[in-house]
Image (tube, rainbow, N blue to C red; front, side):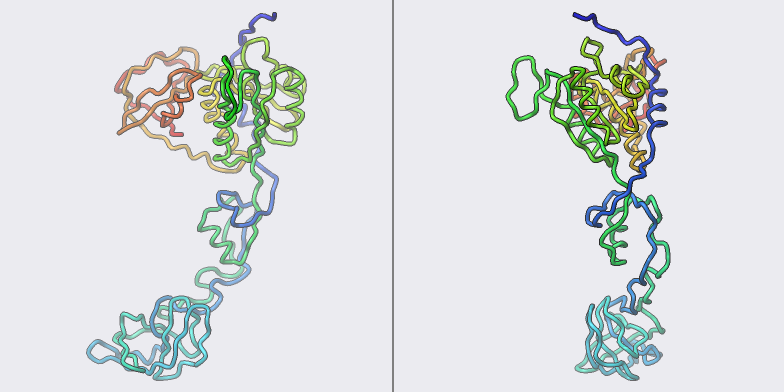
Length: 403
């Protein structure tokens, strides 16, 4: 039996993060998608308006389309009276022309009738039979939207790298676009390894545990803008790991959960070095020391810790920034200064990611142990404790990064 192999050269946490980010390239692949699927996606080319919007003169308010001059001098005491000659609704065209002394009832968004140059809002009128009393004068173009009042043909409406939100997708729809070119999402493949893990939903033998990491990693990275594929659980033999890496080469990330322990089954680092470039193996961080990172061709390969808290914590601090950069998305981490509820004794020499629960401006420790997923599920976020910090006193102000 092989002896246990300790980590010999732990890399500084900030250096590890820098190496990952330096090797993360912004996405260049593009694709066309339906605008119904475009929320949160990043535009791959600027959008110029091919048409004016709304494209015709329309009423901006419910009321009466009039010739503005016919309303001059109108007041509550001496209203102007106009003859009502028709109605027009949104999406319809008036079949009569407004002439001097006449008006047409009009609804918001309806095309302006020929001859009319203003709208009197309904609140400034009253109707008596076929006549309408006007109590307030209007000027030409009052309560009327111009054909290019919203969008002018030829203008750049959305710039490249704009993140598409519901209002911006509304702009695309207003221009008559049903598809849009966006940058592809980072392609992530997750490989759960180890004889000790079992898929949820199956029976559990003594000594086995359910696969947690595939589910936490997949849902986190999907929410951060990645397309994620989860492989079936595989063993952690050399042949099986090599096969997985070969299969992952059409993706941007290959993430192995487990397989980076210090025991005899620790083969992933050796395989990465053989097939590509091993950039680090082990980080001076708590939790998450047994983390591996390397490149095989252009695919970034991560060996994540097997323990659920270590794995998910490292995903937040190392994987998420990389995914967001590749996806051309901002990191957008919410941070808040709060008060620490308890003394914390840290591990000198190791950067610590310390989970906390925040309530009413107070941070309460949430960390149990690296194997306890509830350390994360009950936490609001995490503190970052530098490697040279031994003790943080109760009542100190600390910065929490929210999940």
